[in-house]
Image (cartoon, rainbow, N blue to C red; front, side, top):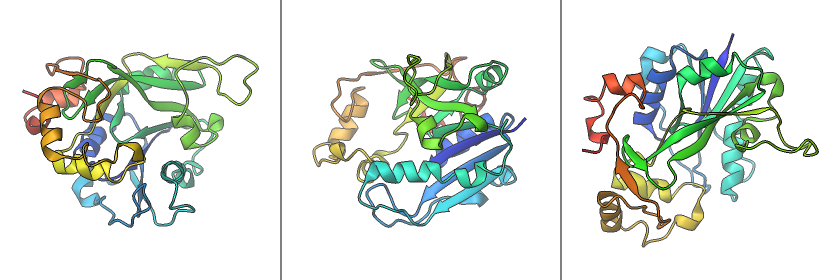
Length: 265
């Protein structure tokens, strides 16, 4: 049985390393797409370096996206980058399982094993939602429906799979997927795992243009918000520290020392 882990990549080196180590024993291939333009249409250098992940090189399929049909629509660019992985997905048989995520949305590998034994067509991983640090839990909205899974034969496109909602649709909604399983304890979403410069860079380049404001990107404002457990985007979220325990991936528990700079003390 083949399982493909399809992710969009920007410059999340630490998270990619964590992801590869957590999922390596459970997936057949990692399909990584990276755009030569950010989601604002600005030309950028490609960051992915296979030499940093040589342990996994036989499992990684790297797809640089050098051309986009529309550089003026951030959401269209994200959709195109996600769907670019179809170039490789198409080479696998119809019974292959396809997981679609952002790189910071890591599915619980034990739940992947459970899902493939069920008869559900689609799976939505309900993931613990962290910000800024690996153990800084969003205390307001602490679950995130990030990673999605289905068989290739039920896949319309990677982006449509990623946009699958965690709900059951009525039978007459023929445009929506049916037989969806909400996968509890489904993994971890580590959002904005950057230093302050990295946070500003992401805000200036990702698809949420509504947040690209100078007051939000102010370094001192960001520092204070993180220190006080507040949301840099003023959405009334609060954050609390969690101990690294059995709610976290085994790999992180065993390698806390390696990622100590990304753990809230």
